[in-house]
Image (cartoon, rainbow, N blue to C red; front, side, top):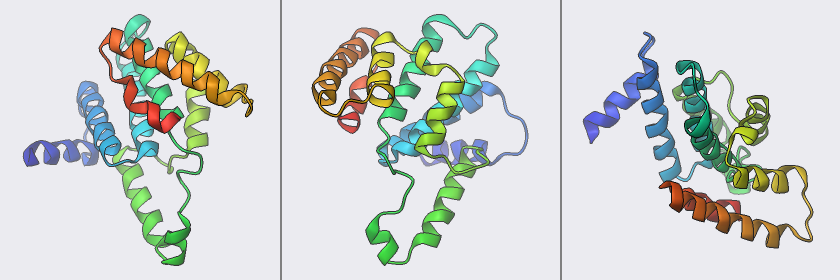
Length: 185
């Protein structure tokens, strides 16, 4: 396990050009690390980077494969809490702001991102790449409900039903979309 993790980190630091499939594997593994570590922001950023690699790597990146990748990116992005990139009040009082910025820069470097990702930045990028339209219709509907047609009086009941649909879709396709449910709620 330690050797695998070491090799994984070397791909991210390596200045030489590796195979795109190695980078796709790297972003998939690091997305899992971020998810397990509770960092939804960098989890979504990793999946977005993986989507970009697949899009560039495969001439015919359409259909089911593109939809599956887009669905995962969109769900991961929707699971990022508002203000995830901001420091907590406790962190500000403990005067660890500089350390937080340093850590996020290091994480951004691991993802080969020039700037530190934000929820809004990721949302703009997925809109630019038409990811919501490529994703599964159930997830696109959830995205529109949360990001575009926000109605505080009925959002809870609408989102609850949509999340159940998405969990069923994940079970049918063999994916674990349910992992995003609690974060989206």
